[in-house]
Length: 141
Length: 141
DNA sequence: TTGATATATTTAGTCTGCTAAATATATTTA
DNA sequence: TAAATATATTTAGCAGACTAAATATATCAA
Picture (cartoon, each protein chain N blue to C red):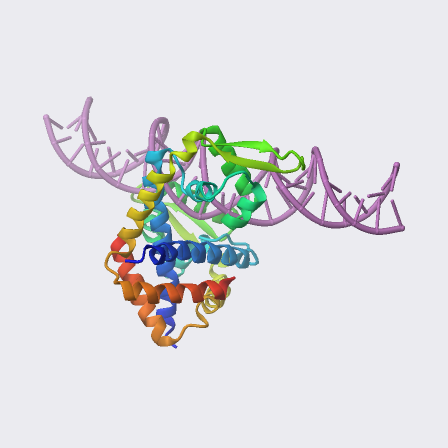
């Protein structure tokens, strides 16, 4: 096994993902969003009124991370929090109108970023790439 | 073009890299390192006495990031800083013995992580994967 | 030589992440 | 019912990463 190749794959992965994150982050600033917040909103666009724990699970991150993101999004008026009526430990997160209106522009930016990453890669190659990625995911989780 | 596939590739990439980062981070804590610091040290193992600007370029990050990483590594005794003799603006970074000794254990952990990611993927597949990644890199930079 | 510009680094402040510990509320069990 | 345990969230504090602005030193040009 050529170890140099393995090494380059990992390093490449790191480089690609950090660069994408950076570019995407910059692009999202035009919408007054920070990278990561789009993913949280994305879950809410699919249905809001969910709890912070559910957001944790979806974002695959820890509770304090959600607390901070939610706080920041609320301060910017994209969402609001309401305590659950039946369980006072639980906070439920709802979109504001301002938050709802972000769906289309975020989707556009996402697709733009997507196309930048993959434009030189054919449909068949994308399929194969996706399959390999899913195998890598399985290896990690 | 199937948009769902495109979407999954990006999301997959995000998931894989953040999970790897998390796992690797945890693994590095056994060596009293934080994720990212290994990469900085790695550049020094290839030759120390370089400037912070050179580290920036290698790590593809901004100067304040290097300032903070270097400060933390210095506080933990892995490196030390010395002002350049001919240009007083420049700080040069050197490994301490403690820093030098980390090379092998970090390399071991890196390989471990590498193998976890790729173990179900054959040599030919790795080659192809690497080629695709390099094309994606080109798309981004 | 003085003034303008360029370069290297630091400081301050923000966000995404994390862990550990605190708080508040629910549930279970003795 | 009271105490122990479980669950949801917050707080505090740290790291990587960023931008904008400050600082210090070099260089270049009039």
